[in-house]
Image (cartoon, rainbow, N blue to C red; front, side, top):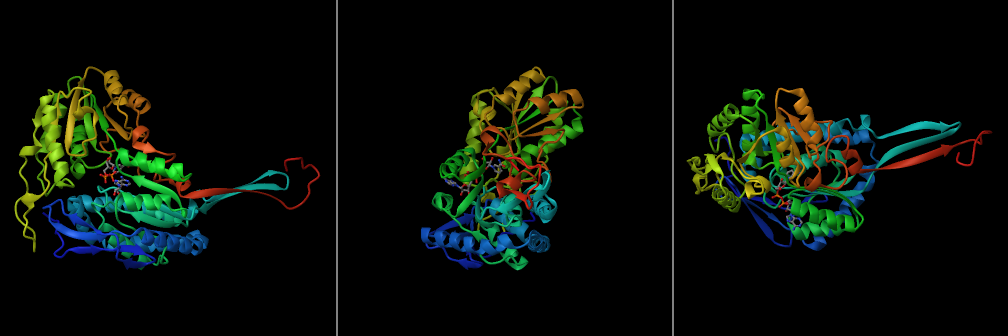
Length: 499
Ligand code: NAD
């Protein structure tokens, strides 16, 4: 066990105007999924404090927005250096509050740093252009910041998901309000401190804690021009509707139910590792995790390899814990319900031993944590909970299919649309899945098909509300306006009524 829980309770105030400010509207306890013991608490700002924070952010944005893009990128370059220096301590905190393994916590931060590296080249990206459209007349466009923008993030990636938006929104000259998950709000302390040390002017970056009340106050504030959200579909829809009702730009990413289509000609080694790692990584708590395996024809040898790899994982070492006790209870009950509806349990994570031992300075041992091992359910029937609902845990539901057409029909019937992967050695069949999957992201022999920079991340259907994507080139449109300018300096003899 590499993760060390903090020895003392961490106090997380709000970050307003470059200072740590205690919220006046109560507090939230943070429990570690490793043992359900309190490791921290954050204070919730009052409505007056939220209003003040956003006003301060708006004032700070005026200067930041006028700072040349290259200078803004220099601050982000400093941030990269600091995050790399602080990598281990951030990863420790992330795993303590989120239940991740240390390796996963580090990998998530590294992925966030890749987004930051993309944002560092902001002046080389699509910031504008100019063309002579007729003699003596030019049209140009330039990107302008929106002002104050906000982002609301989920529990499962306390650094990576916020880092999808922080560097790009700041690089484009906005002030940024972050409402971290109420379950994993502590990592925000490290990121705010890193931005301050990097030289970001006070007020440009703000952290406000809380839940629904804080989120609503942020969305409703007239100075907040755009809102990014990542979380469950239920809340994504609420946030999207509330923000767009007020005429604001909103991109809200929701939940997922991702399918992997496994064909008999797939490389068994590649599929064994790719599929096992996809449903067990982050204890299945990621929106790109495999949830349903559409097993086409005879793929028994492949399934054996998936199970062999998954069953070798040790809780607390290779796999982390579930976020809450309630989520564990929900998943245990979901496995029971699947069994009752006819599913056969090929691998039972309820029997996987919890890690033993206790942590330095803590009275509660690891056995009190929210542990559930990899679980594989076979002959799951379409239409049942295990086949259709997002469970958000290390559970793989196998649905048997006679051919690829049936597999695609099942995949297409799900309202979500984040990711679908196919494991095959046949290029034509892979192309068919690429073309017919009802998802924003597709993998070929890749279990977690997250696009890497400069490509954009984003699903479709009930996995995303709003236009565009949250990272990569597409994200520039989320956090900026393009201003179009048409210019003429002299009267030309051939000018017409338009130019
Ligand atoms: P959640 O929807 O419960 O919470 C997300 C955020 O919304 C948190 O900051 C939370 O404090 C806030 N919130 C909760 N209730 C609210 C309300 N009534 N009004 C306004 N804000 C509210 O999600 P979660 O449990 O933290 O995260 C897991 C979910 O996130 C899963 O469904 C997962 O698929 C999804 N997710 C999606 C992506 C993606 O890119 N599509 C990425 C990561 C996670």
